[in-house]
Image: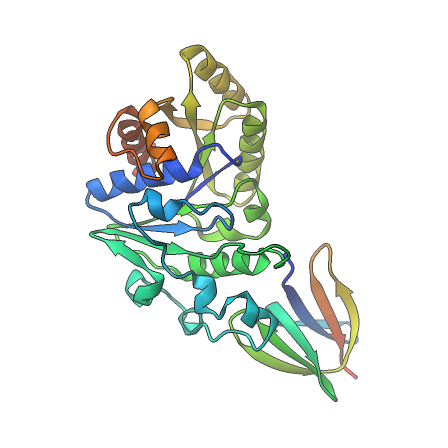
Length: 253
Length: 63
């Protein structure tokens, strides 16, 4: 199963990705976390890796190659990619947790992130997973990834919604775009400070017929871990992420 | 998406030659197309349209 985690910038996508990954490993899945956000650098650390893997952008020769002779990208010439096919320097791993990174914008004036979008789309399209394997994709903020077709081969779209008007508006847009691609999109409430605020968020999401499959509470342990660049290894947020994962894994409900 | 799809047109017919094209090099009789993954194709003709905003496509007309 391929699960994309989407939402407004700052809504907590990366934290949710890390929490879901921890829970998926605990449920005996082999997990591939795909960092498709070309800006935020912290996911590797949150997953407990000291250094990030080389990016898949480097595998095809980097953006310099795009401007010049072009990359070799032999991995991408195959019709299918499994986790075993990814060269080890491009795949971080520990136990059943694996991590790939598409690429980051590193310098001012280096140009747009479109090549990374193509790389993500092709990687997800070719990626083949076994029955006990899950890919969790940390998408770039906002909705442009739908325009780029990145979600074409995604099984479930998870929208992370924080308590703000903008976040609710982005959720509504994601739901519409996902529906247009026949993708099931579900929301989770994140960083809810109180029951009253959570209820207002629920009303707004239900008004737009957005299914809610969980509520990650405003857990101080998550914020403490976040500041230190690590995933929170226990607490209410992690427990609730486990419930969210169970609901995502259910084929029908 | 900045990367483009290149079509070749001949009369009313339009054929997709390559997608995710990252670089186009002019050669004597036509154009060398190179995609993000290093695949190349050569197409004879002259450029008719380059759309850089909406659908990001290039139409090359057969001479």
